[in-house]
Image (cartoon, rainbow, N blue to C red):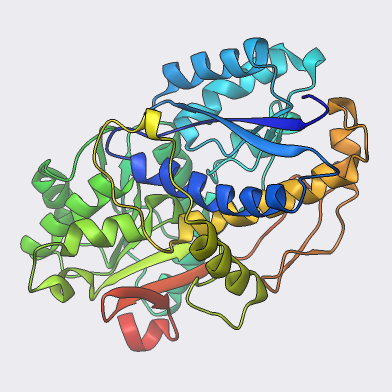
Length: 388
């Protein structure tokens, strides 16, 4: 940090089959930071987002974090993407805890950054995978779909979601009826027929997917093609717009693949301009047209005008600016905890107040449910009407 800048460090996927997540999260955050910087910054200091690509892989994420902490000496870490990367970075923050470098608002709902021994080194805004999977299970069971299978990424992220489903089924006296995994980094062009057949054999009433958009789109495609006619759900990390784009692009029969699709979200609909923060988000995205760091882009990517991921990035940045402002004219890392613990019933503009405290390191709790209608994700009005 200098007298003119506050530098935040971000390691995320800007390449590989999950690059849309890092790119969209960065764009949403950049739209808000750009607006603040054009207004004079935070108490006269510009907010700078120092960004590195990790391709959604743990080893590069660790290397990037070392660079950000020890060479770039960033003020805080911000907007990391993914459980397999974050779970490897958390022990480093503990090891270097005398530097008081915290991770703010990672794009993951996993438990490791929400509980001991690493919870004290991270602050979360989004609801957890445990909350997302519990909501999906409760709604499926509520309409009589009790036999639930799981398709998940074979790593810490997938297991976190798998554990959430298992935990949510227990009070209903149910267990996961079938499970199939895939390897992180799988592409949409990959074949998921074996996984579909494994799950079909378990005769599920619904399947909950814990994965990234390329693999989950491939699974959805093959499930429909092979006649697995049950609701297929994804948690928010999937990147809904990226998944929808893959499953429908170049097809005249896209509706066939999405009619039984339901995705949970941790932010409200970006179409709902009745929500103040959504209006602000749409305005700033249009005004500033934030672009991903060109030096990190190795493959073609067409950004979305709006997405759940970029809206989440926007809200992350909005809260980050509020925290930085509460540090006063001479911001210090040592004061970050007190600043965030002072956040109580703060209005982000989405209809849910945000609070933090020593025993509360997650700001939002709400989970939303969306389905595809006329080629876009919209709020789900009735589980019974759609899926019973």
